[in-house]
Image 1: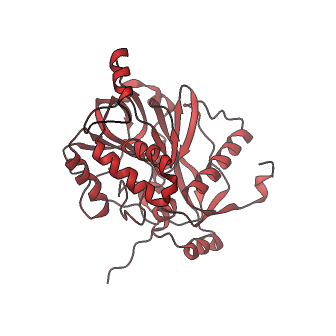
Image 2: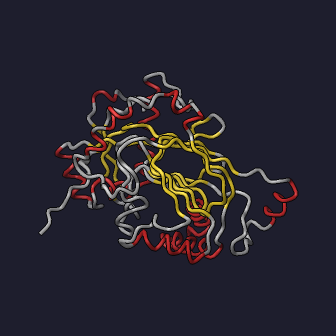
Image 3: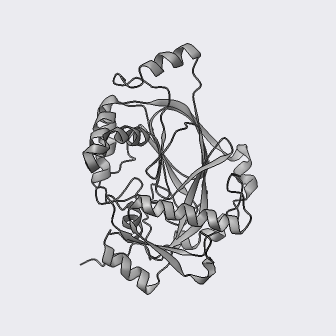
Length: 338
């Protein structure tokens, strides 16, 4: 991208979440490069992009459109672009060994969703159904992964359990800049402010928005906010296949998917995950059985699913960057009751 971006109001793509992600990476990287910011530094304060992104949905899930507009309709998206609506969006940056891995706006998932994505890669010949087939196999395998999750919990009035939805003109998002002024770089780097959970996890999910889509109208975290500088960390601890199915099924109905004893959710600014280091003999034993995993056995490590892209590393640090990008949208509008 050598063009002078100051001459443009926005850039529009036609496609799904993958196309949007590629545009996001190019735009954020170009903005940081123009301002002399090193993206690989976890404590770097990234510069927000001035160029807005427009999305004409044409993908399989269109999660970004659905979570920001309430519908994945090309005409609705085109109208938002023509009118010039603006909706800021938080972006999660993932780091490994002092290097930026990827940016994401919806799901960064370890365990179940990482395994499903990796498994589906060998089923591309099936088409979109490969995700359902891979998901079924992973549910039956009931894999879990030991490790330590460290996170910096957000302080404020909002909570993943408060049932306050992010809608057009959201007060939580509009007042977030003033609230985040008290969250300095020292707070992020000071380990005394962090909490830690060690255990065995079926799934670790970090989502910067509800991640709603046509198959799950409320998404992974129904009350997640688009632009408040936080993400929701969902920890599903080791449980039976039936218990995990119960959690998954609640994403498709009105029941609370967090009201289960093995599910914990926190609103965070940053997190780190460190997998358990196994003894050499134990590592070899489990690696040999990685693809013939008996139900319930803990395998060595999983992979991360970062907005549909595989990150082949288990140790990962994630930080939320407040309102890093803008899209042509106005948020989900409240429908008048009849």
